[in-house]
Length: 85
Image (tube, rainbow, N blue to C red; front, side, top):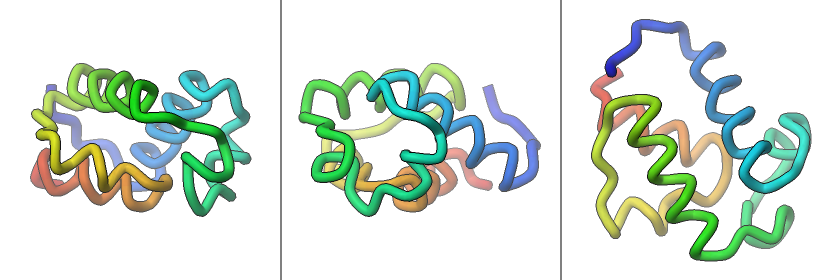
């Protein structure tokens, strides 16, 4: 499902999704420089995040994309590339 939402809205959606998954606040997600280091995300959580991003934004993320889901801005860039935003 492609969306035409503005960048801020998409960032908020992704931050909320990550926060829910990592049991953090959206503000903590926004401040995190590394999901792994700052929010204790492991590879299993990143796989779950990728699945949720795929479902929500109608994109397909490959194995190489998982390594790029480091922080909020990087995650947004990956999804934006795949979605053609």
